[in-house]
Length: 351
Image (cartoon, rainbow, N blue to C red; front, side, top):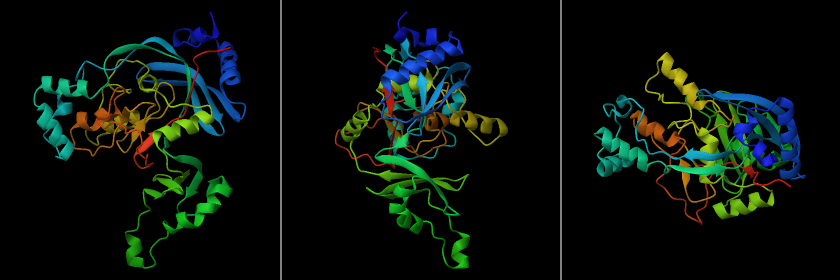
C-alpha cells in the first residue's frame, strides 16, 4: 500500500496513533512549504452526528488547519428532497415574507411535499460519486481580502497579536469604538458588529467576549485571491472537496443531522449548539446566514439570507450540499462583509 492509499479514511481510521504520526510527518515534509512555521501538532478526536474521526490539528504560521483523510468513491450531492425531515419544518404559519421567499413561492408553489422536494433538490448540487484526495484545510474561514493580525478588547482597548500591523490602523479602529460623551446617549450605545475601511482593515465583534477579530484588508477578486494563495502554496477547495469537508459523506442533508431550530425551548437551544459545533473533522462552518463561502469555481456555498421563520428555508443554506442561486462573477470584487474563504493544501501525490 502506498502512502496516498494509507491516507484514505477507510485505512487511516484503523491505524495506531504512532502510524498516523509517521504518515502525517510525511504530509508536512512533502506538502507544507518550508517557509511556513509549523507548530502545535495535536492528534485530536472529533465527532458529530455519530461520525468520529481521529486526525491531526496543526498551526501553519499560527493559523489552525486540520488534516482530512481522503475518500475514494465519495457520494456527494442530494436528490432526496425533504426526506427524512418532518413536514412541520416547512409550515408557513409564522412566515415573514420577503422578496426572495415571494420569488420562491411564485416559482415553486411551496404548498405540497412534492413542490418542496423539487425546491430542495434544485437548491442543492446533483448526486454524484467522486474521489476526494487527502487535504489540509483551514479550520476557520476568513473574510476575503483579509489577513488576520490579532484580537482587540472593545472595552479595555488591549490588543493581542501583530502589534506592528495594528499600530498602523489603531487610531482609525478606535475612532469607531468611542462611547458617547453624554449619559443619555451612552445608555443606548452598542459596539458595532463590524468595522470596515476598504484596503485598510476589517474587524468583527465577538459579542460574548467583547473582543474584535482584527484583519488587514486588500481589495481582491477571486482570480487575484487564487494567485495570492498559489504563491503561498495554498488552494481554494473545489465544490466536491468543500462538500466532503462539511458533511464527510454522511448522506444527511445537514452535517449535524435532521434537527432544525424552531423556538427557544431547552431542546431547541441544544440543537442550536449542535448547529454551531465543529463538524466530524473538527472544521467550523457558519451556523448563520451572514456570508457566502467561495470555492475555486463560480459556485457559492452557504448564503446571505434574512430569516423568514420557516425552518427549512432558514436552515437550507447551511446544508452540506446547498448551492446559492447567486453565481460568482469572474471579476467581482469580494467584499469581506459578503464572502468567506478558507485555505487548503491538496495532497494529490507524494514523492
